[in-house]
Amino acid sequence: MGVQGLLPFVSSASTEVSLEDYRGQTLACDASVWLHRGAISCARELAEGEPAVGFLRFPLRMIALLKRHGVRPLIAFLGPNQ
Image 1 (cartoon, rainbow, N blue to C red):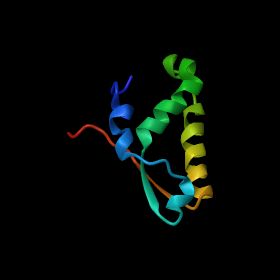
Image 2 (tube, helix red, strand yellow):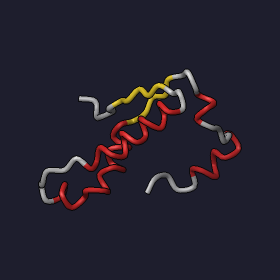
Image 3 (tube, rainbow, N blue to C red):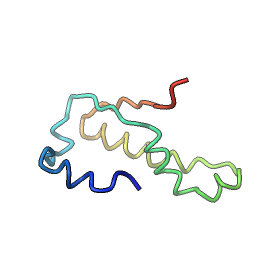
Image 4 (spheres, rainbow, N blue to C red):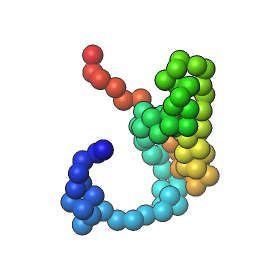
């Protein structure tokens, strides 16, 4: 999944950083990616139409992680232009 060969292609233009480097700044995050990742924890419930809130655990943990490091999360819900 994803773009094959992307990481090696951009490696010369990337630098490893710590979240501490962004303390006091705002970081925009795509909520759909985090929700999709969180859906793995309750995939069966979602597939069968049962009540499920497990998909929220991952995004909430990521938000807490950012805040713990002094980074203000700006959560964006990107979707198709209509």
